[in-house]
Length: 193
Image (cartoon, rainbow, N blue to C red; front, top):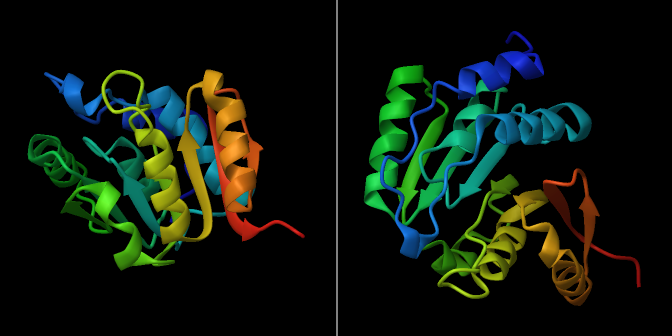
């Protein structure tokens, strides 16, 4: 498989269709191609957590992160979202890009944790921040992701929540590392006692 350069990946992701009418109650907002490309390129090239890996994309929406992961050679990427309309756009994007290493599941991400313990190598997400209607939703997504991941969770969060998330990471005994001002990584490993 040809290695994509960052600009190539971003250019391809600019072709991904996104929400025309995002649902405010679900805190839907498209992940911008530039942020998605930078995040995925770093995960792929710095941490080697995409190519030939099983990837879960929680709250996948229209599939920006899943599609980027597939383009970078993910073995299998599964997007999870509660919204049928978002998954319809996602499915159309999969067809347009002729990707075969992506699946999607319509479900409530909050109900996944017990059924999918350590099922995926890597979990990626741009979760609802829980600032408008769903207070604490970002933490529920993060806790679910940590249970699903064998290796690492990569998640976008508001900078203003960094201290709270660090406190939760300490409580959950996982290592948190800020990779860039825009996104963080959580490793699903126990901290030394």
